[in-house]
Image (cartoon, rainbow, N blue to C red; front, side):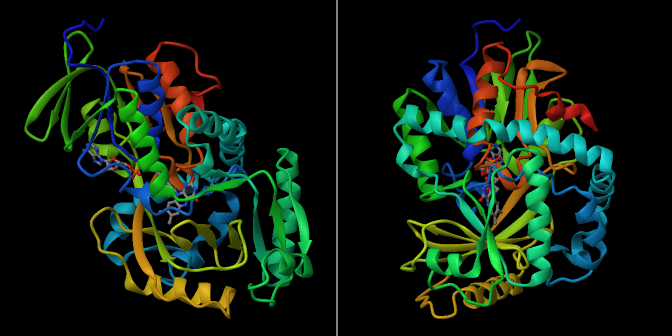
Length: 417
Ligand SMILES: Cc1cc2nc3c(=O)[nH]c(=O)nc-3n(C[C@H](O)[C@H](O)[C@H](O)COP(=O)(O)OP(=O)(O)OC[C@H]3O[C@@H](n4cnc5c(N)ncnc54)[C@H](O)[C@@H]3O)c2cc1C
């Protein structure tokens, strides 16, 4: 059992949206919490995401359909899914597990697990934001996915049927209805699928800053520095090497996103965590007509009207944590945004690349370490870290307090591979 000789009751490692949300829940529950990050909070992957509360994404990317298209995609460096030349060998074991997780039976299990996690995601996020006085960040007007060709329309109508099996509401909009919703969009459209149950946030980085301010107001402490090593003490508590400074904590929450792999190894877990790099262009000063995220089925991009401007995001690129961004991706995003909004003026584009933390089966890791229940793991949220931040925080709070989580978290165990 842990003793009371620790500096902190809980140390949250990583101040991305997942760590921040969990830290806020824990600080609100009056635990003695420290949040540790080498950067200012919110500057990791959580900085530049699309801001979409994508509760409709219940099908893991590891799917029979992705597998069928993968060879064509992976060999084309311009496609939405690609491997950087210098990283092909390193990513091979991950891709092999991805292929195994894409088998129909594994895909079905993954879908059921993700659908259960997603079922409470929006409500959990809303509750957390309300508790912290940040509810104005959450916009719940849904989003649309455009079909520019008949083939995309057919694919989206198929998806509509599959989603109905999981009670995800959708409606088909004609091209005229889309034009009414977003008059400045291209008219070269077949229509769009409307998802009324999704949402977006006003600005992802602002949200992180709001979380951080609320955390500090609730008495949480922040330590700037990277955790270099986690050592387990004989009583099951931890000594963390934060740069050169050792601190002790009864419990830890490992939420360092794509950087969690080596720290999990300190806890005795060898995990197939890698990163799917994604890109954005942000257009500050954009003043367009629409106020919901608009995705394009064929372009695999999404545009979100944020308070910082219009943002277009896209690409899944396997290239690890060290290679620089590929400049051609920004050019491609610019081509997409100009094609979708042919008459829009963009005074400036800001460029960004971030590291989605992804497990090969496209499910996050959420749960206590099977080796030591005082270590709680919360990473690997792939394309859904913002969406799942609230429900993850609820689960983490239960685990820290030795309470039963609100849903079955067995599918998210770290030792499932
Ligand atoms: C282009 C793009 C678009 C996206 N769009 C969406 C979207 O619309 N909706 C959605 O839900 N999700 C989206 N995502 C995914 C989402 O952004 C991520 O899942 C989420 O940000 C992951 O959050 P995190 O807190 O786990 O990781 P991060 O935000 O990366 O935070 C991890 C933190 O850990 C810190 N850290 C690293 N090493 C250490 C260490 N040794 N010690 C202490 N701290 C450490 C880092 O500095 C960082 O601050 C998108 C991602 C991309 C790339």
